[in-house]
Amino acid sequence: MKLNQKDSDKIIWDQMRSNPPPILSTRVTNGYPKLMLYLILFVCATYLIYTLKLLNTHNNIILPCTDHQDLILSTRNSLPNDTGPGVEKTGLKHIVFGIAASAKLWDKRKEYIKLWWKKEDKMRGIVWLDNPVKTRPEEGLPSVRISGNTSHFAYKNKQGHRSAIRISRIVSETVRLGMGDVRWFVMGDDDTVFVTENLVRVLNKYDHNQYWYIGSLSESHLQNIYFSYGMAYGGGGFAISYPLAMALVKMQDRCIQRYPGLYGSDDRMQACMAELGVPLTKELGFHQYDVYGNLFGLLAAHPVTPVVSLHHLDVVEPIFPNMTRVQALQRLMQPMKLDSAGLIQQSICYDQSKGWTVSVSWGFAIQVFRGILSPREVEMPSRTFLNWYRRADYTAYAFNTRPVARNPCQKPFVFYMNKVRLNSTTNVTVSEYARHRVPHPVCKWKMTDPSNLDKVVVFKRPDPQLWDRSPRRNCCRVLKSTKKGLVVDVGLCREDEITEV
Ligand SMILES: *[C@@H]1O[C@H](CO)[C@@H](O)[C@H](O)[C@H]1NC(C)=O
Ligand SMILES: *[C@@H]1O[C@H](CO)[C@@H](O)[C@H](O)[C@H]1NC(C)=O
Ligand SMILES: *[C@@H]1O[C@H](CO)[C@@H](O)[C@H](O)[C@H]1NC(C)=O
Ligand SMILES: *[C@@H]1O[C@H](CO)[C@@H](O)[C@H](O)[C@H]1NC(C)=O
Ligand SMILES: *[C@@H]1O[C@H](CO)[C@@H](O)[C@H](O)[C@H]1NC(C)=O
Image 1 (spheres, rainbow, N blue to C red):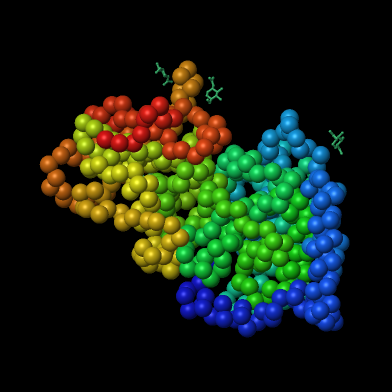
Image 2 (tube, rainbow, N blue to C red; image 1 turned 30 degrees about the vertical axis):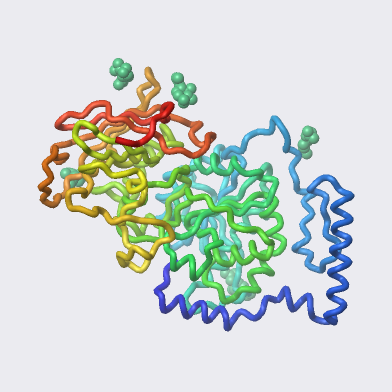
């Protein structure tokens, strides 16, 4: 999604003009005198309170006094009988993916899907396309389907494209395939890469028998203003629990018709969620990445939450330098396989002997700074990227950022991961990070110069239970510091261990 400010203003304007008052409200008031309406509401409320008192289980509530059949959500029949102790944890097999794609970009974009997709016996999902494409079973990609014809839906947004309707309906179309034993429907784009093990970790926190709409916002404050701070951005991916998907499928087509002026697929989805009364539950590991340039600052200071998705990978530079986008992501998949929970997680420590600050983004990169920077500063993403309007503007984001360096001496020395393996004797991962050689400004500080460092080696025990505990950054310790390199240990903080000098 991309708009410049003027266009967006216009869109908001267009929406206000072209969206008549929601049909729902007119539907209620037409034909009833106001007094009558109040009377009905009163009777409804009384009846509801009475019903609630009688019934002691949440899944028997039936609202009797409304003419909106789509909003009457008796979940009695759709609740699986798997609640209670001893219930199987949510696994990959309980998730069905709905991937939005187009025939035109398929050949290029399918490479992103190949990075994370596992064969049909492990994962279920459909790629929804506008036109047929050539497929080869040996590619091991999800099955491909053509979306239903949406030409009879109204689309009145001048900036957007009507494919938004097709993409918004992917949830319904996927639900209608009637797959069994589904707990979650997860949507993503063809240029979204999921870290599926972390997706499972996040979804496991929620009861799939309830209504959940889970995802994340845009990085761009303006995009969030123009669209919504309550909307899951589609490219970052979002999850809808099974009963909510069932409720959505009953009303989505009518709902879409009520919002012809909206821009995209995800704002249409949010409009329907608002009609259903279900708010967005934000999970910061879903990444829309509405930015340009280098993601480094964001990846090197990831929030303390599992990485679930990465998006707009065609827009930003490759995440590792000197290789193609797909190669760079393939490299990231190596540490992911060894310790997905810890992927890109930050830890901060100090080389006391040299007076340096060391920031580890496990499986991705290391930064070494001259001098002591406090954790509150290092855990803030540095602005290595441009905003969605291609400007370097620190007010543009929906979160705090910091300049790349406040002082030229503190421009970080960066090391990118180039190797990772598991020592199966000790059950510890060994990852190696090689110096990214770029010119550094002259620094006159009288202290050891990190520019002699060639590589950093990090030891870390895989920690699949990391997110079963309350969120906390790992601790790191500089084990060895030579002229040419550092050896760092990353792991659970010990008793009383904090990041201080
Ligand atoms: C749950 O439902 C399945 C299929 O409907 C049934 O076979 C099973 O016996 C049920 N389990 C319990 C504990 O009711
Ligand atoms: C979609 O439906 C319209 C009429 O509703 C028809 O004119 C058009 O050919 C259909 N498109 C496809 C691809 O079937
Ligand atoms: C970039 O990669 C090529 C081959 O993959 C290598 O020969 C070259 O030295 C690399 N350049 C840098 C700056 O690392
Ligand atoms: C694994 O770690 C042990 C103990 O540190 C070491 O002796 C051994 O050489 C390591 N193995 C590999 C393959 O690095
Ligand atoms: C290695 O550590 C992981 C995570 O703690 C654990 O699940 C696994 O069983 C361990 N493997 C061995 C061989 O000790």
